[in-house]
Length: 559
Image 1 (cartoon, one colour):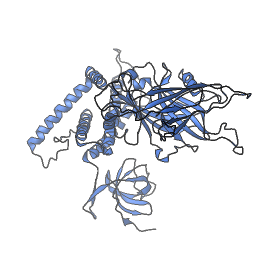
Image 2 (image 1 turned 90 degrees about the vertical axis):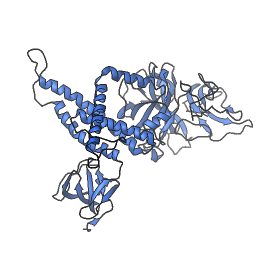
Image 3 (image 1 turned 90 degrees about the horizontal axis):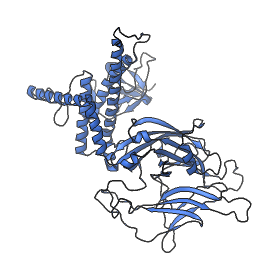
Image 4 (image 1 turned 120 degrees about the vertical axis):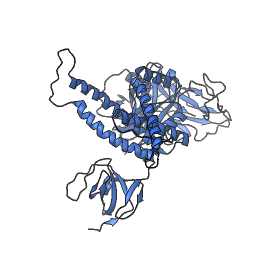
C-alpha cells in the first residue's frame, strides 16, 4: 500500500453519505465539511469539522474540493473557507436551521398511534393544536431555507455589481435575523456593511446600540409578516410595479423512443387565438437520447420575455412543444434502399396548461419538476398545428412514460431586471425567446433600425406566406424599443398550400424551401433562424406531410 502523504487540498464537502464499515473509517453525511490531512491511492485522511476529535479515512471520490486558507501549517493547522463571509454565514445558518427543521417535521407528523379526540367544549385536543402550529412553522422554515439557498446561488455567481451586492446582503441578513428570531436562536449584531461585529474589537456601547437596531428591524419584519393585509399590499404593489414579466423554463429530461435525430420546438400558445405568442425555443436532439451539443446536457434553459399584463390575463396559456423527426420519410424503410434523408417529419407534440403559473395562482419553483406527456402522431399526415388544437382540449392519452420533465418559474421584470435578480438562472448560457410582438410598455430608448436594402422572400408556387416585420409594431411609435434593445426582426409564417397531383395516381410529398434573396436574386447567407437557441441558416425547409393535397404548416421563422 502506498504511503500517506500530505496534500495541498485541505478542504472539501461530502457529496454522498459514507457509512462506517471499518474502525478506521470516518462516517460522513451529505454536506459535511472535512479537513483533509493526508492522501493515498484515492483515499483521504482527516476529520470532520463537526467533530474534530474523531479522525479517519474516507474515499476521495465522495469529496468535492473547495478553496480554503490554511493557517498555522503543521500539527496544529486549521482551514478557513475562501468563500466570502456572507456565503459562509448562509451555509452555517442553513445547517443550523436544517436540524430544527427536521425536529419540526417529527412534531408535525405527530406520534404514531396517538388517538385524536375532542374536548368536552368541542375544541380540539391541545396536542393536535400544537401539531397544527408546528405544521405552519415547518412550511415557513422550509420556504426561508429555499430563499436563502437562492440568494446564496446569486452571491456565488459573482455577477452582481457592488451596489446590488450590498442590497442583496441586506436582504439576506434580514431573512437570517428574522428566522433566528422566530426559531428562538441568538440574535446576530452587524455593522453598516452587514458584517458580523467582533465583540473583542467593539465597545460595549456600540454592541448595545447594534442590538437595539437589530431588535427594531426584526420586530418590524415580524409585524409585516404577520399582517395579511400588509402582505397582500406588498404583493399587489410588486405586480403593479412590474409591467413586464418573464417565464423561466428548464428542460430537465426528455424520454422518447424516436429512433432518429429530432428537433424540439417549444413555445407559448394561446388556444383562443390558436397561435403561438412567442418565438420557438429550439433544441436539437440526437438519436442517442441526449442533446446534439453535449455541452447543453443538464443546461437546457430558456426564458420567455416581454410578457405583459394582457398576456398574463389571457383566459388560457399553454407551453407547447412540437417534436419533429429528422431523417427518412418512413421509419420502417431500410437503409439498403436509396432514400431521401434529412426530411423533417411530424412525430408528436406535448402541451401543458401554465395558466395558473403565469397568473400566480400556484407557486412556481425552479426546483419543482412537471411531467408533460407526448402525444404521438397517429398518422403520417397529421398536421402538428391541428394536433396542438386537439391536445389542449385535455384528453387523456396513453403516453407510456414518454415525455418531458421541465421546471417553470415566473420572473418579474424585463430581461435586464431578471438577469440582475436571478443571475443563477438567467446567465449568458440561458436562451432568450422573445415575444412575437413588442412589449406593452413603451420606454424611451434606442430606435429600431431599418433594413439597408430591399429583400425578396422566395417560396414555392401555391404556398401561402405571411410576414410580420418587427421594425415597427402596434403600439410603437417609429419602432421605439426599450433602452439598449434593438430589434430588426421579420417573422415569416408558412401558412398553407394547395398542390395538384397532376398525372400521378397519388398526391405528392411536398417540401417547401424558403430563402431570402437580395435585389440581384442572390441568396443572402445565414439570416434565417428556426428559433431561439439555434444557429442561423441560409434556407428553411418545411415539415413534410405524407401525400396531402391541402398542406397546412403554420411554421414561423425569424429573419
